[in-house]
Length: 80
Image 1 (cartoon, rainbow, N blue to C red):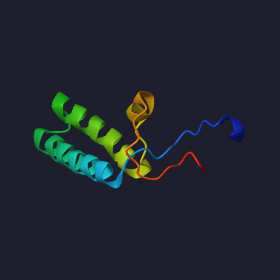
Image 2 (image 1 turned 90 degrees about the horizontal axis):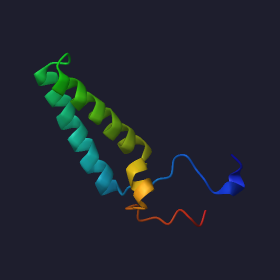
Image 3 (image 1 turned 120 degrees about the horizontal axis):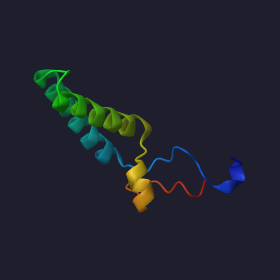
């Protein structure tokens, strides 16, 4: 897509506090999947959710926030 269209794939829309909470929850889910066993349904679901949360922490982007129009990032990125 052209840069003029205004659509960016990865837009930071999470504050550092939001990212830290997601990181802690992801770590807990990884521990849960380790203790319950990786071959169980609960372990696999915990790993899948933890993977999504780790992506959110690293990228600072949450697609659910984007669809709902939520932005907890304190920096105004629309002026760039």
